[in-house]
Every structure is written in C-alpha cells, then in structure tokens.
Image (cartoon, rainbow, N blue to C red; front, side):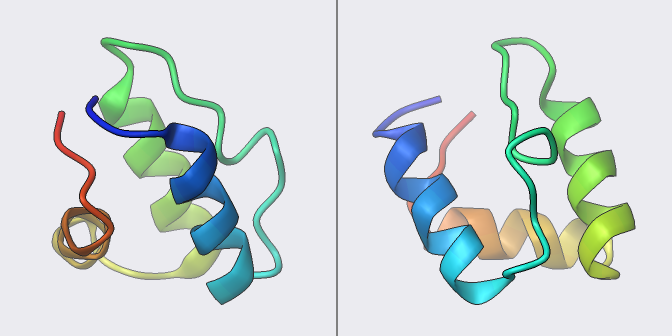
Length: 60
C-alpha cells in the first residue's frame, strides 16, 4: 500500500464513525480480510469499498 494508512484510517473514521481500530487493521498481503471487514461493517459492496479507497489514494 502506498501513502499513509493512518491518514486513510482517519478519513474513513470521519466518514464512518462505527469503524473500530480492529476494523481498520491492515497488514500487507491481507487486503481481502480488510475489505471483508469493511464490507460487513459499513454495508457497501466490495467494488464500492475499493472505489472509495481508490479515491483516498490507496494503492495495493
């Protein structure tokens, strides 16, 4: 992932207050698990979440 994950987490929490630190835990190679957690928590499709992360300049 490129850029600061802390900045991305901050933006996601601002937009989705229900997200926890555990929801936003990211480890290299574990992108699918992160997307699954976000999908379950905020009720968006995987494509919607990937677009949202792309808009926040997240590049895997």
